[in-house]
Length: 568
Image 1 (cartoon, rainbow, N blue to C red):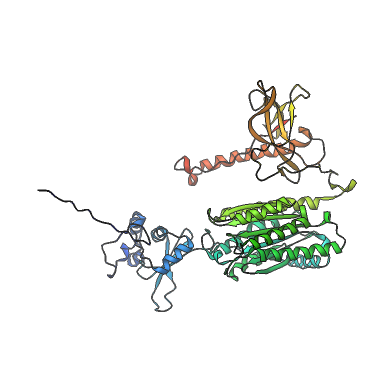
Image 2 (cartoon, one colour):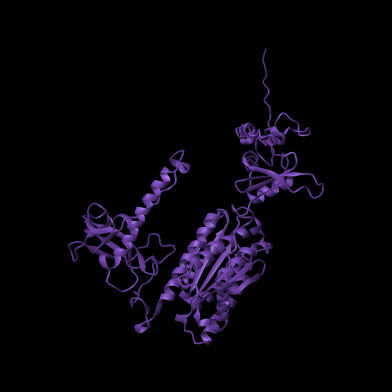
């Protein structure tokens, strides 16, 4: 006798490939509350809910039932919410009555958990909709002083243009894809863009402004990019009133249609050319012109992407850069998933850099933290430019000088960027015992505010000196940053070659005496004190019970400040 074993065929749903878990109660029957992952109202009224809550929270998240609707699935896909997120909301979230159905008047329930809001029908089984709870940004309390300052700056921007220190033009993509709800903490990409712009670009610069109510002014213009360009704010003072307007803007605008880059660029070009012409007519020379900054934010490739559009875009950027040269700062921000196409944004930055401007592209992804960090970095860069401009006047030979110390800036050229892999950069090499006596000193904290310099060995065995690139790769208001390496003698080639890791060397941006005592000691002291504070912070984190890590992978990162060394 031969037994034939028949195999069973299993067919999965083409829409959602997941295992379905069902309770013993049919959907048509009335299901007891205590089997739905919620609290029985009778037991809740009697106060006997502890045992029930404990029982429900001990159930696997997958055991909770969520019956999807077509509308619910579409909303979840748009807002990047999974079915498991809904089940977790039922299991762990706060339950409260929602607004009844507008057509039938039947009750609904709302579950809130980890920023997710989930609406169900009266049985708590059928999905109605779900969305992320939005971040609330409080408006700024405006004082009489703030309002008066706003009115005065508006007058200055209109009548005394030469007092303006900078113009910022912000282009925000408002095409249909900016409605997507895939940035945690915000209703949509549009809300995330405006929210982080207000908090990390406007607010951060206002908080760090060294001269909040001085006799200078800055303006901000906001352009929304759709099929055409719409100027939302034009030449508005950089103040808290602007902050409030940006916070309210996403509630009154609706992303829609396509996103055409060229229309917005033409709009910005027109406003910049108009302002530049008026300043020139007032007798302002190019070197005294304010900084013109463009922040261009988009979540993908442009809708105007034909060859003619590309050529027009290139011409627009070249004309702007050739007119403003180093006075133009261009920041391109990509908001979208890793696979999004930001090739056009990158090429726009390249055009600006090749024609004498300063451009930077950043892919901020779909993280509110990354968006915030990107706007914060741009804010810091503009703050540096502003600090330098406000602290400088014209000295002898018409060179920029520092009022406080009469310092003259060095003449330098920034390091080349872009595709430079394998390209040799010019360096300066210093060998111990040949023409120089080279020593390496470490700045040490002796306690009780006592510091000293200690003569230490080179970082690498066999090192006999160091080499420093001639052109800096970074600059601040006080220092220049160079690529730096120690060198050792190669017996085969009879020349000095690089050894060890590449380091960063910093020198003064001004022509001055740069000994370790006269220039570097203040910076090294700040670094040393910062490390002491970081160690205390790390120790407090390690001892905090609420931050205890389950394993090494989840251990909170520690703060570290690098030790300072001076080569002389």
